[in-house]
Length: 224
Image (cartoon, rainbow, N blue to C red):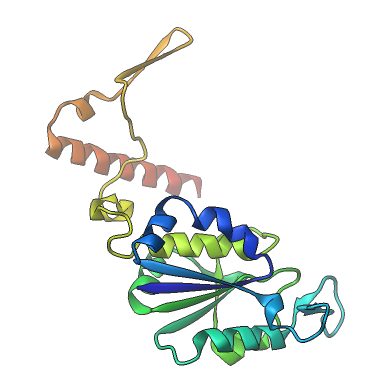
């Protein structure tokens, strides 16, 4: 079982997402575990400050190292197969292959949801943390990236999706998918399901799906 440990200053943000659908079922079925830690609980001053102005000047505030060291230390104590993750625009791109590696290689994944201008750089050095980026854009905090990592890694764990064939990247899946009804009418026009999908010929259907993937890949290459 993989346990996700999320360090954040906004623990309430995770309640709704983690309490629904696939993730909630995976937790209930003990396929995964998710633990949330409020970084402010690891501060020592009465105002529970977690940030301070950066050395050298510059805008915004930076997460201080001491509360994070205390939090991460508590999480990883006496644990093996641990990965500590930070989120940064310049980090390694988070991909399905990486999610699969995490699911197979680690029992504990610590996700630090940073805010403001970022996290004191010494945290990465102390814990040999890996910096990840979930896309070529900037977000206001690491909470959404943390949810994405939990979701993407969890679905790579056997039993989480229920059926192994539900794992899309493990089977041919065209960009076009259809369900009932066979014909949809809208503003005088009829939109039909491709006849091949109604044929019952599974071999030809799979060939059609593969052709759809090839067609889409060719289009993407032309636009890049």
